[in-house]
Length: 486
Figure (tube, rainbow, N blue to C red):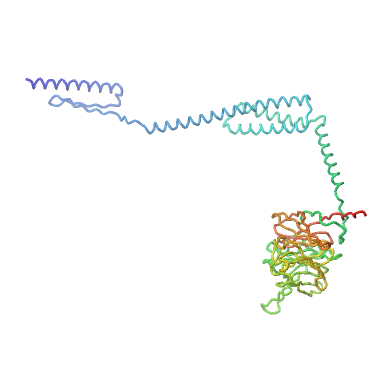
């Protein structure tokens, strides 16, 4: 009996569970009838067996995370754009106020309420240009059009046109008169300066009635040497003897190793030099037998000069001075005692120019160094006929500290490099007074290196061999010093 009661109780419990389950199934069907499938059966013992198929309830957390990130980025971008708009609004407000002030100033000027000057116009135009630049930037920063910015741009443009018209239609000619006054004032100042400055002496070629070099012209490039860019070292010029034929031009490039002068050309006229035609060419290298060359007549370095129809130069691989007569083709030579050679003390910007020949109104000179003088420049006056040394001067200027040197009226002038395009005549030694001093006369260069520099008293020009180019300069001289009254 007790077992029956227990069984009945179990059946009642199972019945209740079944009813609850059916209620739950009905509730699911009412919410998602299309998404739930149910099946059920009762076994022999009266027990109900049900199966319920529910939809996939997995939460899409990854999609929600992406959505949150996108929302955050969008919020940041919106904040940035709001900040930009606030900044533009503040800037526009300030410039609208400036534009209003400018408009009032222009209206006052237009009505003749105040006097105006060129500075007024320049200040107005400067402020307008600044606002135009800002408005253009503002226009570019917006993807689409902005009514406030476009209106501001039109106003700025209009006021700019108005200011330009006011300046051009200056009916009282105030600006024109003031400009004329400024121009006249400048002319008067220049006239006063010229009146107080020294009057340059009249040109008298071959004379030393002046006070030395005061200025040098811009370089004039005559031509590239006929052998081309590779022949960067050499010398050139005209006969420096007083009264010599100035139509003839000579050019003597060195070999590409910057050492040997084994040929030169002489052009009968300046036009022939420009056209590379009509030249007389001399080769100094001799070949007495097969594969046996004689270089004894060749030159060394770019310190060559033409004086009275003869070329003077340092003989190759020696301390001798050679004299080549262009009429007879005879070569004479004499040793320059104690002179260093073979690149012992050359100039700073070129090699193999230990012995540098020069000429001026006083004759023929040689510039060199000795071991006894520790490489400082030595000047010797030469007899052009027999090449003997007539007199010698010893300077305190180190030869390697100069890029080149030349003689004018018995005064040595030395140059040094300031930059790739500028050279300075910085040192002078007067052989008449035995005085040396520092000076500063700037000359421009077409190319970086000065390979040779020589002076011609017949035209007061410097002849420079500048990295293969033939260049000239005009020299200006001071007026001679006034005699002291007794």
